[in-house]
Image (cartoon, rainbow, N blue to C red; front, side, top):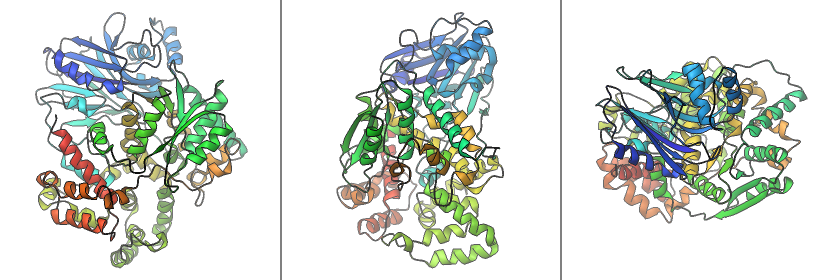
Length: 631
């Protein structure tokens, strides 16, 4: 993995500030501690921080073609680069290194913008095309590797792996984007392509951007999309064999490395599946690691040890302090913009543990999105059955009134906590799914913001993010629609962002075989009914894995990385919560209703209501405001 950044003069050939480019590059040193490099020419400058994984001896960047006409700075891995290289050699291109970086250069020379369609991997890169005076930006299909960009008022295109690099440029305006704040307090992250500031954007997964000198910057161009239209498939036992064969192939692609390699092993289905395939492909014992929690409600280490023992891995486990809240300030600096997934804490710790032994780790991320593993998919399918039976004119008023009257019983057994379900049934499909993923209830969302901030939103609602993506999904099964929406929002905006920043903080490369795009395309074409079978999510994946993993792993209740926020905010962090949430910084932002903030804190700390998610989001937003003062 690496960190990339650059400056491109859209107007002319003004000289590049080399000292500024150096600072923009070196602020990404955690992404690439092994080396740095620069390329500067008339009106263009590229910077690169390198984490050496493949072709350690000759893969330095930025890299140019032999004639110096094309230059690239690149973050990622192209797993099929040898196949692409063979094709290019057959077309007459000559190579001088053994790196995938050089393959990008000559692939672009041969196929232009469409070169990305040839790549299987995770990547973000910028390529300077001197003859056409243009810069080409590209991001991988699923958004595993990040890339953000901005256009300054005086005509410079900036790009970088992380926003912190862009923020160092003195001409980049820092105004907070109101729509991004609305999105953040709905989803807990800011979905692509927005960032927290007006003048910067994320390049969305599966898109490219070609900027030419003397022209305005166009809209990004999409080169890939996932389709959940069911495809013909053999649903006999042969389907399970084909699934494991395809999955094994995806894992095999990700085992190429010149540095120590291992895997995260949580004891869940997805990470255990990855380890089982690795063990069958490796001559040496697989390096695995996991973290444990003192609270048995959250502790999966026993299951991880079952898999480690079965496959005789070199397993390391380390217990995390259940009150490990010392990372709060570090997370703020790590993510650059408000980010409210508290599982970033254990993710940071497991990356820290892995890096002690390996430089590359495989993870099981993407299994829930691909195979319908989240509980919310099950509830969404149930709600859709009700919506199909009862028309909106009857369902809306009936369930809406019931949801309004029904008390909010956060303290009660789950069977009695029906308020949110009743409210969801009163909504249409997208509003219902939005309700299931939002970190705020409807009532709290209506009250949280100040009147002046609502005026700045001009009627914008975070629901519009899902509405926009739903238009591209086509007419698909309700569960497939939910999966599609997650592929476009939650997966890149939350899950992959979390893993990228946490791993790069420790200069650790994480590879994601379940998100091999060829595997994703094939799995997406399977019927929703064999992914979510009744109450069983990941049904087809689990059936295929039965020869490789015990039932105790495959069919136990899902746990995940949980953090005891509720008890933190009533105990050791109670004072910090009151000081921060009711402090001047949040009030001076002009965003919030102080009366509502006070009620949130008091009701949570008294045990009357459960507000840990919005409180965590407020703490992270306050941290962003504090941290942004440094730029």
